[in-house]
Image (cartoon, rainbow, N blue to C red):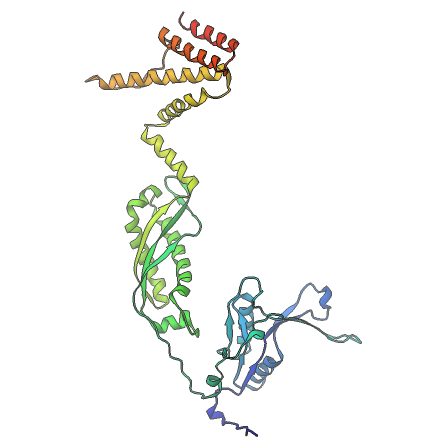
Length: 398
């Protein structure tokens, strides 16, 4: 028979260690679980309750060995255990799938007895994190071997290059030229570990392994927040950002350095590679640029009208639509011809073309009638519509 050896207190780290599930306990007070509308919540579990009582009632050194999911309920249990003064350095943390299919916190609904009614306990603890603890997940040798324990961590201090950042969704900002706009941006940055002690305290904690990919998500969110603030405060218009990307990158570097230093990191470089608008806003900006390049809205409208003439001839809009399109085409043609003639004459300053006279030349009328007659042959226009438009055009020659 194995002899049980009780070590002296000086050779131990813990007076009591409990191993079991820690659940959330819901208490309806003096009401019934089945019709309660509110519950008081605290942590509980048969084994854990002993450790907590040893710590709170007798001041003993107590620890708990259990498992919890990485979600808000797991962190609630953690907070409650810490309030009880029980050590959690041997808790196993499990990744959460967002639904609770792989792991969860066990729930226990406890109802007090009243009169001849007995107390009632109702558990909901399937697939709990603690129920899935497997051999090898808890380092029992470390727990019981010696009160003087140490962990050895290795930190890489090499430069982490080409770490990507970007806005997952457009960021809404106030632009001095366009008002409220939504921007997208992405780029790269580089950093390295400068203070392992600070990084251990602030980030990695007691995790056995903490890689660059684990850190990227947290850093990326911090970068996006700083970028939004900087773009909003810079006063640089969107159209000028392309020529100021280096300056924006340098400004973000200085803004982000204190944040990285707080985590024991050193930011080496920060590059803004692209700033763009969502597709629908980019189309609107392209149209505005086209208007400005053509000399204003009037010129842009004339070009749009000229582009619409061939399309209008294919529609079933009748004689009125076709005539209007052709009339607009002749008006634009006359305006363009006058502008080109003035520009080609030396010493003559080009002036805006005057509004064309409603009358047209006989050649233009004949050409128009020939085109319309061709549409009658194709069945697009009726003979009556052709005759009406013919009379209208001939009347302009009088």
